[in-house]
Amino acid sequence: MDPDQQDAWLEGRAEVADVGERMDAIEQRIKYAPRFQKLLRRPQATELFGILELYGRTCLPMPRTTERYYWSVSCLPSTSDKPLVRVNASWMELFTLYGDGDDLRARFIVHLSDFAADGSLAPEAIDRAFLEQSVRTPQDLSYSFPAGSDIFIVKIRGAASIRDFLADPRVLRAVRRFNLTHMNRGRNAYQASHAYSVADYMLGEGDS
Image 1 (cartoon, helix red, strand yellow):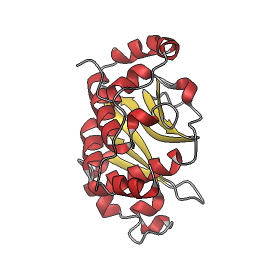
Image 2 (cartoon, helix red, strand yellow; image 1 turned 60 degrees about the vertical axis):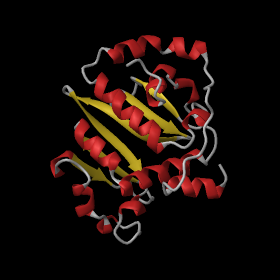
Image 3 (cartoon, one colour; image 1 turned 90 degrees about the vertical axis):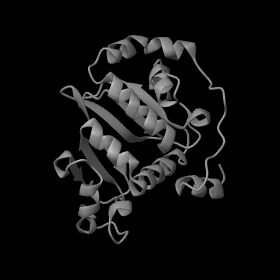
Image 4 (cartoon, helix red, strand yellow; image 1 turned 60 degrees about the horizontal axis):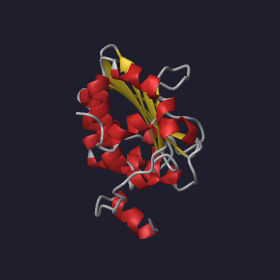
């Protein structure tokens, strides 16, 4: 994608043509098959795959072309916060889903400036009213500000609120911008943990 195509996609003015057939790696798929089977047995699986498909369809540019090498999704990664799935690009986490009882909670990492009322990097400028209106109830929302950077962490509880958040045009643009920023930084550092069986659902190819 050249800069004009990226800008058009970012703003939702145009869709960029993607490849029809994905690259696959059978050994990689088999490696994570046991984890994927465990994920399938989780009570949140149906909602999780639906949200992942929404994210893959709307938040990643040319997701088939860029799969694994510019973004990846890991299945039940072995980290202390015990996520169900995590989407990464370059060296950066983009989006994580966790179990929350029988429901889900999510963590989005985005640019702080996209959620500041004045476009600044000042935490006090955050547009709190907009954020609270972008989810089902304000109680579903929390956020934090890593020091000294244009990074904003948004945490959302409940599949319904996660879907509402992703449906908001301003949110979608912000998520797309952050994802483009890190995909443009070069090849994905997490290629080895890419779970093709989870990516099937992100790309609309999962079993119904």
